[in-house]
Amino acid sequence: MKWLWLVFLFYVLHVPAWSLDREAFTFTNYNLDIRIEPEQQRIGVRGKITLRNDSALPQKYLCLQISSSLGWRSIQMGDRSVEFTSQNYTSDIDHTGALSEAIVTLPQEIAPHGTVELNVGYEGTIVLDTTRLERIGVPKEVARHSDWDEIGKSFSAVRGVGYVTWYPVAMESASLSDGNSVAEAIGRWKRKESYSSLEVKLHYQRISSQEPPTLLCSGTETNQLNLEVGGAQLVSADCAFSPIGLAVPSLAIGNYGTLERQNISVYHLPEHKTAAENFVLADEVELPFVTEWFGSPREKVEIVELQDPRSAPFESGPTLLTPLVQNDSTKYSLAAVHQLTHAAFYSSRLWIYEGLAHFAQAASVESKSGRQSALDFMESHRAAIVAAERVLVDKHDPNTAAAESLINTSTEEFYRSKAMYVWWILRETVGDVVLKKALTAYRSDQDKEPSYMPRLIEGQTKQDLEWFFDDWVYRDRGLPDFRVESAYPRKLGAGGYLVTVTVENLGNAGAEVPIIMKFEGGEIRKRLEVRAKSKVSIRIETASTPQEVIVNDGSVPESDMSNNSYKIAIADTGKEVGEFGKRAGEKR
Image (cartoon, rainbow, N blue to C red):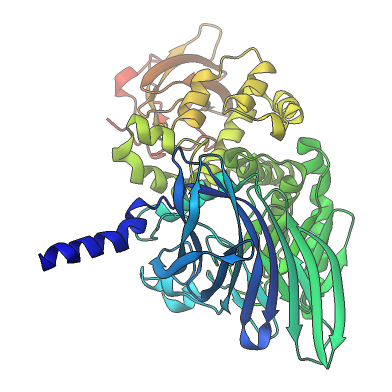
């Protein structure tokens, strides 16, 4: 009988874990008081959080997760402590590779749509930690420039969930070694919390004779106050993310110099003022282009310099944390276009918000350096898209196709790079004027369903684009794979040639694609709609002997670009060569 009692005891102790739905609750509001002590690299947090049960069942338990370098001190409802157990929970949503998870037993069940308010307290250190990256094989020296978050004695920069979990969250474990699970977990979190609000009272205390530091956050900052108490500097500021939206709440603290203009603020280390001035200049140069496409900025762009010159840049809405040591005008121009687009055009949909910012970069490059430069810029993104699609090549069932569609995906290569191509293809299909009108008509608060933006675009043109949006936006059907199946030239009596070109799309996604016919002394460009798994023919008249036909100039991402060229050979008699023409890169 003794073993029965052991089984019973084990069951009782583990019921909370078995019945716990970590993602049942949505954090609707945070009101946190944060104290940072740089000499100890320490952070202490006290505050109130509000959670809503968004599951279909009453919930007796909930969990709260913070970085494993922090520890829970108290959790209360009102002035009464609630029962909770704290445990280490492995997850790569934090740079330490683990979370300090509190499993809270509520005094009574919270019904669906019911809310609960908790007063919480936790504290600990935030130091540079590369654990999660090193355990998947990233060299430490490389990892430290990616996971650069820390509270330092002279400089601090800390990103939020996905990097350092300095405010409570709740989600299932995710691992960088498990495909895209980390991005998927964070993507679910962002979608749930996009209408939530986070308010922070930030206090920074250090013993120093230097000028007081500047406290910065990626939200709306107010009421910065500098005091000196007993020889110590006390700097405080209020920061609000309301709503949080797609932002990752982030903090930066340093002895910054500041360059202020109407549409941009650059916070730079004193020795890098020239680089900051160049960034401001890039912003001023790019502003008219962005305004023409997306309207005037509604927010101010903020550029915050990172101390380590090799740190990977990080953006959160119109705020960009980046090194400023290279006076690279091209790099600054691209960054300025991206951040200005975010400041001017907001959408809660990543494929629109991020895709348009990347599209704007390509379009800006084209406006200054020509089409080929823009295509080269986009080509630098194509390999990453192809690799991401290859991972899914065996999973293109209906469920995966919907999960990885642009409207749902958490894969950066899709909602950034692939979406950039989608906007470029749409621009070339419907024209600049139509696309600009659709963007002008867009209202984020009215975007309640995935078809909202497609309907705006289709409303400005008579073209049927439903098939395109189905292939590229509503579902993930992979990439097209175009090839010229044949090119039959026929000599015309009045001179010149009429070439019948047949293009085949071996892929599962279609697009309107450029056709380039090269002939002696020049070339002709046409556009041809080639849907998935289909063949389409077009006739092109040339003034002289045709030499080569190319499908796709790089403006449409393909899984294979090696089979896009077809050499045309003309017999001495002037008759068409047909199937004996030389084909370059044919794929059967």
